[in-house]
Amino acid sequence: MFRLLETAVHVEPLEGDGLTNVLHLVTLADGRKAVLRQPKVARDLPKFVVPGAPEILAHNGRGDVLVEYVEGRTLAEALPVPDEVWRNIGRAFGKVHRVGLLHNDVNLYNIIVGADGKATLIDWDNPGQGNPLDELAAFEEHLYLHGTVLPQAFWTGYGYVPDLNLLRTHRIAGCIGWLASEDWREWEDDRTLSPHLLARVRNWRRLLARWLADQLRTAVLETDGLAAEVAVLQHRQRPEHRHEQRGPQHSQ
Image (cartoon, rainbow, N blue to C red; front, side):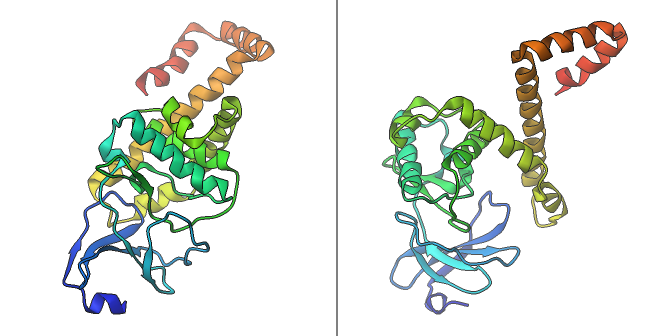
């Protein structure tokens, strides 16, 4: 596949939480470590060279990539982390956004936290251009799925705090888009996913649906006219119907 692999002294499967790639940890002849990342479905090569991203050592037309290995733990594994780490994560996002790029897959498994607190964004499979608020909203969404939120230390590292109401609007739009995407069907059909990973994505979908329902419900109640209309409609309903309507909310 790659000439560098012909001289590798050790290759082993890399246990991880990736949903779209097969990973191997490779020890090269010169002692360097690298990750062989092979997509389950062929894809185009990255379109940009990103400053600060792990070095790509080799790649091919199918989308297989041999990339520099980054020592550390994923943010998902490292949580909770101190403010210093959050500031470094904010700096990493800010560095990318200031040059006009987005990572486009900012889940917690694509952020490596080193022993020294350094934060590195990995898996640059699909960088692109766009609105940084979409990426920040997506990061907030993934943090929610892991039971936490963006602390002030992140914004200190990032450089500024955006309009939080506008960020919330981007997150609602992104959540709707994700729930309507083909990701969930593809994961359900993927026979290589472990029961653990399949249970995780199913739980993600439930959490996203619950969060979105809460946001839309809050938006309605924050609008005086609509809130009054909702109150009238609820008053006109039979008591047993109101009880049935509340039931699923509690069961979530």
